[in-house]
Amino acid sequence: MSIARARTAENTRAASPFRLVSLPQATAKALEQLMDTMLTALHAETGTIWLEHEDKTYTLVLRGITIQNAQALQQAINTCGQSQSYPVGIQVQGQNYAVACAGYPLLRIYLAVKAEELRSLHRRLMPRFARLAQTLLQTTSSPVGMPADDATHQAYRVVVESSLRRLAELMRAVGCTLLWFSPWSNSWHRFAVGNVPVWLYQQMWEVPSSGEGLDVWVEEMHSLIRQRGYHCVADTMSVRDITKGCIFLWREKTDGDFAPDEMEWLRVTVRMIAASLDVLETQTNLLQRVYQDPLTGVFNRLYFEMVYRQTLYNAQRHPRPVSLLLLDINNFKRINDMLGHETGDLVLQIVGQVLQQVRAGDVPARYGGDEFVVLLPDTDKTGARVVAQRLQNALKYATEQLALPCAVTVSIGCATVTNGDLGLLLLADQDMYEQKRAEKTPAE
Image (cartoon, rainbow, N blue to C red; front, top):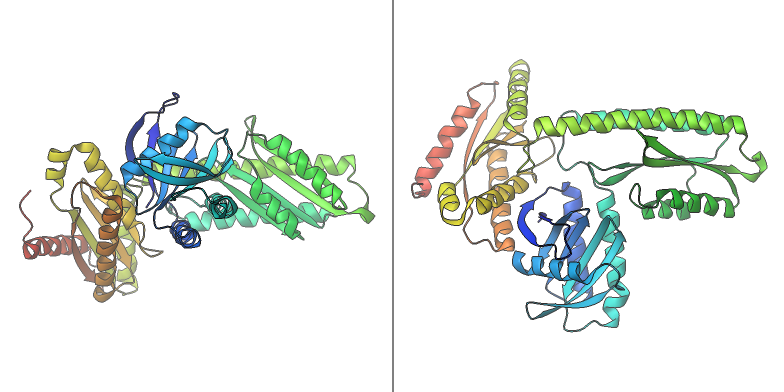
């Protein structure tokens, strides 16, 4: 479960309310598996993984620990500062934890497990788990799929890799790699062509955040490649005077060092590639703002209605089943009235994140207020019911893990059409209210 809270820049870093953020499904599952593996290896039952990036803390995984205790643990680490040697032992709420850390000043990953004392096993294994978690997070893609996201990224990848191949060919390079940092997704995009040695590939995962010693790192990598017996040329990539990436080319010693005219060709090509990547990043950022609900991380009503109409029109031309789930949070007004709107927002965020566990191609969206929809193309009624039950189970598991002060349940209406009937939403709405009556949900 991915949770985030904002904190002040003061030394005390006072805690403020949590908010959920989304992770790509593959990354979230990998982190969950990492936590399970770590607990097994360390003979522990309680642990958590969290990430600090600039002024935000993201609690990525919880195992047997409440939000309050996890927050207290993060606060204790904050007060200790970043100068100590990890792993360290920390006592919080009368419990002892072993904590490890990996990363850089602006991007740090922490792992903690409940432990009576810090043993040699923790000292040996936890730093390795922390570095692995850092690697998993640095491969994350955008938090939620955007319209034509895959096609756009694929097109730019083809353009960039084609440019790199042409550049490597003209410069007689045996290999070339390009790294581009996206602050929006907080990750490095890596492109490589030709022969990339394993030792060099491993080094590429240790690159610091853009602006945090990147120039020094590029020089170190440049020297390392030359020490390994290659001629190498490297250059940083900047947009509007902001360094956002770097490029390396290397070739065999027998081909001689890179000439001045080759260096000039490299600089021209790098500027062109940097401009293309900047356009992609800007387009993706704009699409996120236009089509994503900022609170829950799923699509908003604008995007849903656009895809809803297009999907049904396509089904009219080429008949196939289309299903829709309509979800309504039970007693949501009561939650707001009794526990406050901050808790209500947290409930919405939990539901939003659960909905992002749907299959690729399905469209989860916030329809309005406490109502959500999931459009299921090429899915019959039986398949839609299976998805609905899986979402119910995932929501139950999430609320149990977070130990919320209230029960969170949803009523799910389900409808299917086979001829592109535009009344699909109305059918799902009717089924949802029938579900509410059947469940005998107290009136809000």
